[in-house]
Length: 328
Ligand code: TYM
Image (tube, rainbow, N blue to C red; front, side, top):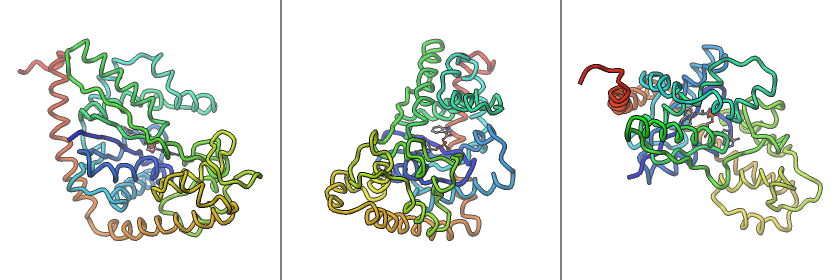
């Protein structure tokens, strides 16, 4: 069975982009692959998050992984900070990547361009992400388009390490879905839907009030030509809604175009809002059950045990090769 690994950072509430670009595909992959899914809480340190909020977001993310259908008996579900080896391997790999390579990361460049004050963590985090990935020798890393470049850097670091110290890491491949890899902001469909968008109406949160989310679909920006056709370049708004529709239902876009060829945007949006509402309701109902009691901590303990076993073995191997350890 081929192996897959991926993670999400708990910096804010989980968005529809995170769900459609990451969580939903993970659930679909679990039948076919050996999956490792984690909460990248060390990564959330790259920006300031109120500690209380971070704790809440972390619990919510684990609960949402489960509510969306990840099965902890089949998937190794863990909290990054429970496996100390990530930070240690991240340090070694950070010493093998150049400032130039890190400066070329689009996410870093975008943050820099905004002129905000940024910490060294933002600059250096792709080396920690490389450690997250290479630690477990996955064949594939399923991510949205914005994380593809970081996965490619992880692969480059693995190639460098293997050639310098002999074969140690499997070379992973990023797996970006053809559709749904970049859900756009509903108010500004040329920008990625994200927690940090300018207009709150542009981003849907999985745990938000369902009627609020449906209203956000109804008020999504479209265009004036009135045709329900997939054309991301010229019709980004309606194309984004078609992507949301197809990823939620698995109905191909061509079928949707056909189904709505005589309809207006209003009817199409109403149907999509209802479909989204049903999906959110299912997830939220499960979530409310899961978040009660100590089920989450049990799942995390089990996941940390399995992940730590592999991580310890891998780190020991790396340290032997590096010459860090003097023990046989
Ligand atoms: P993060 O937390 O920003 O995003 C988690 C996942 O959600 C995807 N995503 C989207 N997909 C489609 N449309 C959107 N609008 C959208 N917004 C986010 C992201 O592409 C990602 O797949 N550094 C990573 C977390 C991480 C990781 C890893 C991932 C840490 N270590 C190792 C994979 C492997 C991050 O910040 O993702």
